[in-house]
Image (tube, rainbow, N blue to C red; front, side, top):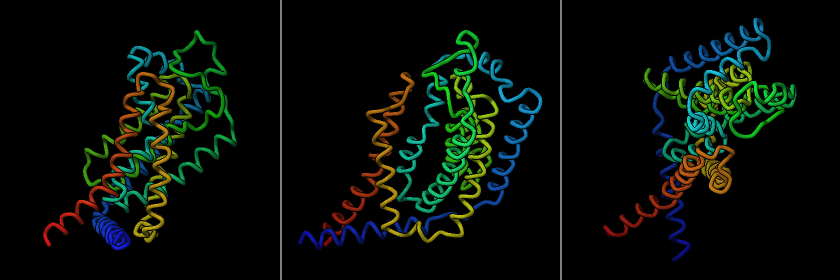
Length: 287
């Protein structure tokens, strides 16, 4: 009896995964062009700052302007660049849109290689390691190493970039771009990254999103593989859970971080447990 029930549950779950795979909308090529332009603009901005003002150029001015706004604003924005939040948020749509989820997995892998690779290669010093404490506004911990590129900017750009790639509306493209840029600017505002770091992060994240989505389009089989899909979902649940007991270094953003982490976990349980079970119970009730 139990074995039969589990078998039916598994079949219903696989049916939902297949329905999600077939739900994938037709992509708008203009979204891909938008991402390429995003990356080129970020490259142009970063290169201009570096060539004219040097690696540290623009930091004190931008950090000073940002200090005129409340700390809680920057703490909330910068917390959105925590890669664990991306795992949590992805659990909200992983089963309904498995192709989108798979695109994020591929793009995220590329982005992680880019960000961590260059951090290890350059190990550039951050503002707290270079500037006296009274010369800039520091919010949160004083990170000192692995400055280039900004990891939070990479994370925000790749997540927003993947969503943008699958968007058909101009307004959504603008909003997602602005969110990623705001997260990047918050890293300057909290005093732990140079503008060049942020520009490089936004460029790399956007390119990773474009490349990852193109690869996922051509190599779409894993999106429909139940074992691989569920394995990735389970792995994503662990960083989402960590947000509940380790919400980060920015105190005012702790409630938001925990709520989003919990939302991702609840969304996972609803998609992969409650809804299939309710569907089977409804069928049994009609018999």
